[in-house]
Image (cartoon, rainbow, N blue to C red):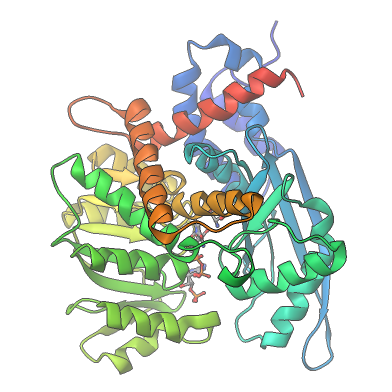
Length: 451
Ligand code: NDP
Ligand code: 2IT
């Protein structure tokens, strides 16, 4: 009798839960994928026999390490760092680094798992990984951030490399932190290479990498709306977050003629019924640089707006919604509220911002709903283009990169239609993204045999 977890979805998920106790985010991410993949592989014996999903849901390795650093008062502080290398079937591990107090192994395993499918969807040769630390950059001095980044890289460097694993930014890690980490990598190894992406333009970075995730999420939204003969122009948008992804998503919505009503941070959300214009977005970007300001201060600068402490923005009526802050920030009830208020489309800028109840609600209502692994892939896609430019030792022009980003987002949209078209004008983008991402990785794994 075949030994297999692939008996049925429930049996498979029981095994995942048992092997990953106390890792709810990881279990949630696997469940969302498994719900679609079990349907798809039902009549595909090879995927069962080779235990492909079971293998993708077991990281190649999880490296966990101590990160010591000294704060400005001379206290020795100890943080925990990780790099989760989930799967390198189609290319070197690739994925961001997150610095946030909520970081733990479950969060990074879910992110590395999601990244595996996302990176496959871009069409570029990148495997899936993610890393980070339970370090809180808020309120830290620049020198403290530098010392932390250097200490983090002093361990991480031995696990990464331009053909091995290429980290980038994520929550709490932007260009400044990538600079500190790249400097330390170079100092330890004496190698100048494309080991990190999201680098500064003067030292190997790519044009439009900073903007790519937010812009890409709006390009994906445009592609979805186009299937209904509609566009972003004239639409009202509710956006959460006020970091890299949220501000650039807002910027692209404004450029395409939409009206942005909200932004948020962990303190609450602001609602600006007059619309958050480019000038106001520039204010937010400057204000939130290096996580110094709070979004609530927006209402002092722009008195037409209101601040709603401790709340998420999903109750504000809108045509389109873009969750761009963090995981599980949009719950089942929020999804129902958005649907009841007439929201037509949701494009996720964050990773897994919608919980499973919310995903099921969007699917049941058959609205245009794009999961992060499809709609926020623009960031890692331009990271992939940064890797190519580093290998080529040259820099491509902005127009070329803009076009490539648009083409990649369109390619992901096409892939979602290929596997997610349910007939009757409904496209299940979750299913489409899961199957298209899975198939590419799975077929590569089949070619390699049991390794
Ligand atoms: P930033 O650090 O630039 O901004 C994060 C934003 O989200 C801040 O407004 C922050 O608020 C808010 N936030 C973070 N954690 C929480 C929380 N627990 N509750 C409420 N709000 C929170 O990160 P990014 O914009 O880069 O990342 C945002 C999301 O996009 C993440 O899910 C990330 O994984 C995803 N993503 C990022 C990509 C990139 O290229 N940067 C690529 C693809 C996905 P506060 O300031 O109060 O902490
Ligand atoms: O979640 C993500 O895709 C990112 N944080 C970007 C990863 C990358 O390698 O650019």
